[in-house]
Image (tube, rainbow over all chains, first blue to last red; front, side, top):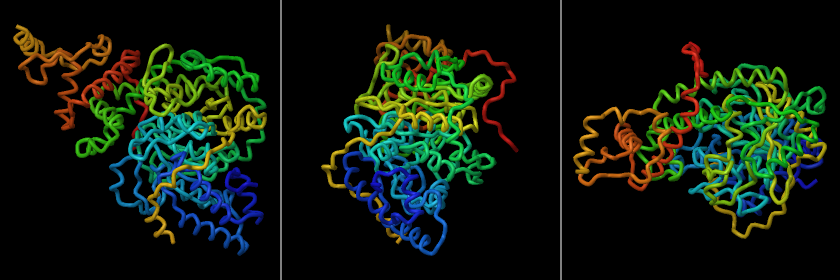
Length: 482
Length: 102
């Protein structure tokens, strides 16, 4: 086993059995990050001292006879909107660099580390998560591990790049309108956006409270499930996080697709697709023996309502920063936020009313099906710097439109697994969508597709970084965790 | 003459500056922002320009001239999208999605 690129499940099993030490795994991971992150630009901070300290503690605990956790010795990294004790939570911005260092970790980091995982760093992202490209004017663009000239997708761009380039087996991202699923699609990895309210968002920098989700990205379905199970559970620090019993999904993966009714989303979700997206859907559907189409009602209106709520709530969040430090924003983000502040409140109220109507209609569909297949993105990764692409014959803005197929789904908080179809030269994702609180369904389907080699997160050949690793802002954290 | 006409319209037809998402979105965008010589900034020809300027002023938001086209463009796109659901028939007693619990 190459510990620098192994799956989380393999690492955890090896560490628990004593075949490899957590320190050796962390050392290999840090070496791979140093070797390749100059090219991928996925990390904005690497917490080397903290990671090594944690790994030593894990090894000592095992030597003392203590049981290893389900993620023993598994390195992971988080989008830099998660609080990491000792680091300012920058959320992809210049402005937040002036914040005091976080005094504690985000809830999900604490839960992963309680399961034995080891945080190794924070990841690049689109400024304040208002982005589908993975480009960042302050930290530089995240680069796609399958083609460094192309976008990772965003806003969890570093999460997609770090997992896709096998710098870490697991990363955390956030998804307001598609920010886990879009980079998963463009970087060729698995991504889970759980049901709205399932996982705690506590101690993360928000974007749109009505729509914000958090979740994992990984290179195998089992890794996705292991991370998800370790993070479940109510958290009083996030008022949206439900009081619901933990419902482990890892033991259910082997159940396969028997008895599951699956359909393909038609209408809106079939229009505007590039040939590669059509091919991906067709491959997945054929492997599952699915031919029936189902119409998700009023999806264009749902997407529009999500767009309006996002613009308005995002603007409200940043109003004071816009007044005081407008020049310090990414201009593309600033101009969208200023426009968002000008949206009449009546339109936002109407959007929230439509949201309830739409939710009720879509939930009716799940009386007849257990899962719905839909494209994750219209196309494979555009080139970095590309500002427009053709969607249904119309040139549209890339930053705002890579998520046209994800936005109507997260709008009502449905759980989704994005699965990577390994097309050449670039991969592309398919969404597997289920009813609320049924994360087990898309994970079972994804696991079956992975076992059949229909979907897979292949590790691309990466050139050794020509640039020296950038000076990461990890000194504070390193000092703190010594 | 042009100056007088512009002033006259602004004074006698204030309703044109009201925010109507559907109306704004349905109208084709004007090719250029026509500012009449000698008029104040709020006397642009396009209601969307008036909304942008008035909102920026009311909310105390900075709006540099070079940012203006992008801000207006973003607002225009947003209002056009809003028009997709604002005329969708919902009953008067439809509840919004977020529910406050006391």
